[in-house]
Amino acid sequence: MNKINIALVGATGRVGKCILELAQSRGEFHIAESIARDLTMLWGAAPVDAVIDFSHAEMTAQLAKGSLGKTTPLLICTTGLADATNEMLRECSTTCPVMVAPNTSIGIFVLQKMLNVATAMLDGAFDIDIIETHHRKKVDAPSGTALSLQQTIQSVRPTHVGMHSVRAGDVIAEHVVSFRGDHEVLKLTHSAHSRHVFADGALRLVTWLVRQNRG
Image (cartoon, rainbow, N blue to C red; front, side):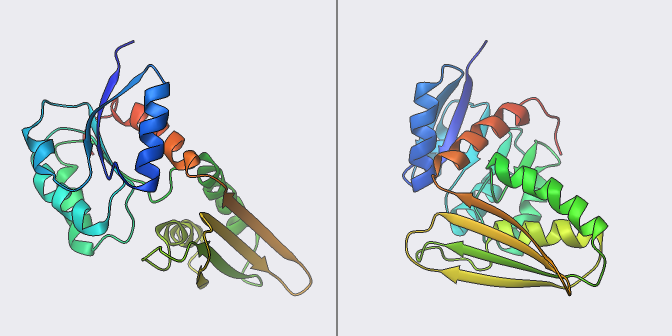
């Protein structure tokens, strides 16, 4: 099996370091480019099979602009993106596969499926709230994951979803979705105890993404 050559944007970040560590321990991946700040390294380098972005909103905007018209798959894992950046990524998807994944842990993918079932089965008598907790240095609030959970719920049934953000300590990530009725409460919770779950999920996703058509 040929290795997947990856350009990693945000390589010095916490998740970026985890991706480097995991990729080095697995034979099917090769980090061809490790980019911390200077994206010109990406444009001047040899072609890669995919780009994984775990950087910050401003750098992702530069990446999206520079990727217009190109065919290299993009896995965007940065959150707090501006509308203009999302529009550029949509334009990028006319020539290459693009996936925007605010949370790459497999547990969150399962939680999304569970929310589809719970929202469909519990009617308007249940109030829905999302409480998301992250470390004190996280900038965007609510988190991109919380917004995607809200979108999943509202795609099943248009309803109000309360959003509550906590920034404290060194909590990596916790998301709690509560369905509160008159006499019972259903809570669905996902807690990330290590950033390796995001790194592992990103490598799983990029393996899938490189086989996709543009879009």
